Image (cartoon, rainbow, N blue to C red):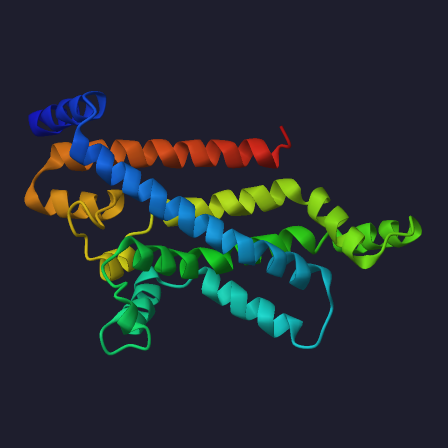
Length: 229
């Protein structure tokens, strides 16, 4: 019990003292997760709106495929990226393995289907009435799609936040492709695993507190957005 209390006190000291190592890890975590979420969202949102608003042959299979990949095990995504970026892989010449870029690529693969699937689910219930309304107003197809996007903006923002929440809490894939190298690819989740194994519970708890705080803020914002406030 004393160890837990002492480690918690030391964790808060590390946070309030602006410990350089702790905040470097936090900074890299935010850079990697924000970049991967933005990149994934730029492709996932248009694709989700397009699939959700159109009827075409094979749509059900595509949606099932996306839904399957929404639950892809992170280590599988990490393995694919690792093999692709390794020396003998097709992109090994770029030297991206064990860099933040490799971590971003792995997280894009994880986050992309999550945002796409949630956007499809958000668009599908509204597409019929908005399409009929748009046609009645004399709008063309691109204008109707913009109207659909506007009407679904809150669920779409929630989808982005959900994707970011998945990215910030991920550990398996980025451990594989990043290597957890100090001052280079060490982020909050991988550092927590490492420091816990070394018995440095104060640093692990400090990072855990920050990670929980970020998760709380994400969940709070998602609920506020879903309420339309």
